[in-house]
Image 1 (cartoon, rainbow, N blue to C red):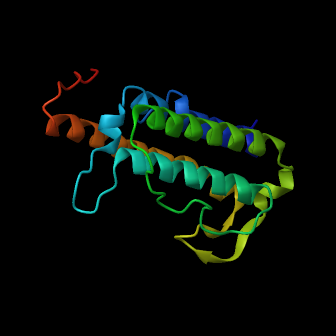
Image 2: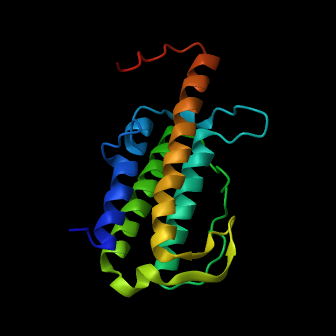
Image 3: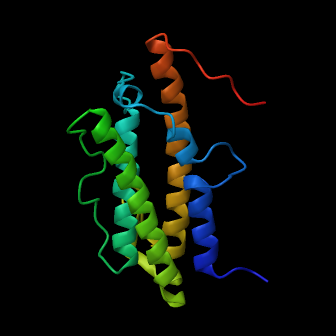
Length: 174
């Protein structure tokens, strides 16, 4: 028997965030040993830092939650790529905690949604950058995919940041 939408979506979001996904380490595992120094390192070429990527994932998690609760589709309240206002170790830990809190709020929201909401469209027309014109089911599952994509970027940026400053590299797991 197939799982209800909420259960399937929550399972996908959890695997990507702090579960045991088949594709590699979860977001939480990837970020567990990232320091503020790693996170603020700028790769150049217009690429975003780990810190900016974490704030971007948090922004879209909050926006998906807001939409799931009935809000009209819009860009995230704090922006698509929010600025990093403070680069201290304490601010980095707060950024990670705020990502975790946004994730937990989304899980609670998905758990509370009426079944009919999952089939309802988000926005009237398809706008890929804004993520509209798809069902709530697709919007929520796409957020898990979005997070997997950015987690892979974070893993690469972490290695590059450490290599750039000559820090020892962890031995890859077999």
